[in-house]
Structures are given as structure tokens and as C-alpha cells.
Image (cartoon, rainbow, N blue to C red):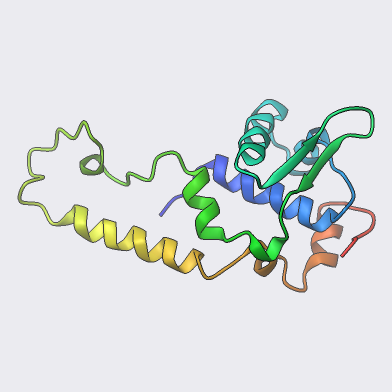
Length: 148
């Protein structure tokens, strides 16, 4: 299984915001922390906001906050929402041109593998990613104080 950078960065944004707690964060701050393109991060944050993971507040005292409690953000759900193409091989696509598809058993096997992958992620939340590591995560991300 392979997650796109879009989903990877989405998870990092949520971890960053969770560690910051009630303190607002900026796109620039997150982009610098993870060395991610600001433009790419803006697209990610916009989608996270549209999907109700993040609240974006405009203005002088604006910034980003988690919309939901980390314990309610299920990783499997997040991955399903942020991955725009879960079609693992050509035969998953609507424009499949593989000539052996009618006799090939790969598609149902990979479909089972994808389901198992997502089922495992459904057992974990953003809070599980943080665990008791918030102080260390804050230090690694150069966040001065953890508001847990």
C-alpha cells in the first residue's frame, strides 16, 4: 500500500495542530516545520477544512485549529477521504485495458488487501498517533509549549 504525499502531509498537519492544542497555527509555520511547499500545503488545508478536520480563521489573529477532538479522527476515515485514487492497479480503473482481467485473480486479492489495510487504520485515531509522545513531538517540531 502506498499513501500519496497529499495524505501523508494531511496527517502531519493534523498531528501538528493536535500538539499545538488551542494555540492557532499558520500555514507558513507548518510549511517550514515539515519543509513542505506552502502552495501545496494550502491545498491540503483547504481540503481538510472542507472535510471538517480543520478550522481556518482569517484575519489578524487568525490561524488553523483542529475542528474535532483527536480521539474522534479515525485514521481509516481520514485516508479514505484524502486519497483521491485508491485504485491500486490498472484493473481497478474504469478505463482498464488489461487483456487478462477476465481470468485474472489479482483484482479481488488486492481488493481484500486494501480492505484489510483500511480496516486496521479504522482501529486507530489521531490521539493514538500522539499517545504519550506529545512532549517529544513538540520538541521535534520546535513547538515551544504543549497545550495538552
